[in-house]
Image 1 (cartoon, rainbow, N blue to C red):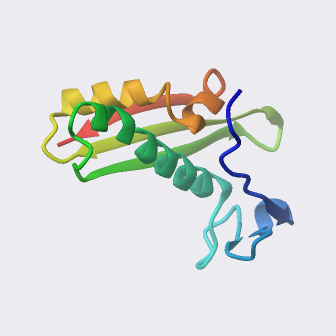
Image 2: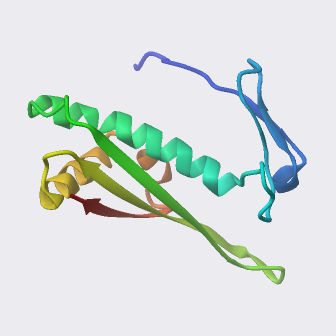
Length: 138
């Protein structure tokens, strides 16, 4: 059995036009479905979470191969699709993760990203439900 490493709790009031706050008080963000200055949306929050988690998880195969000290970035683009207001069942997400690892070729970066798909808790959580595409930059 695995050890519980952490628990994070965030409460949302108001849905997309609302506020999300952590119980600790360290995190608060206003959300919207439109483009309002100072607000974000759930897709942007998901992009922040999956890019941070994935960038942390890719550290494991990089360290194994002696590349753990390389600077790297993971950019997440999260798209929301659907046909509103008529058909709520069509709502779904698509994620594109774009990786860059200093001094590592695009081909090898993609190899590490595909391996990390099986390590990152976010990737594993959405597997089979959200299409994730991988791209690499040099």
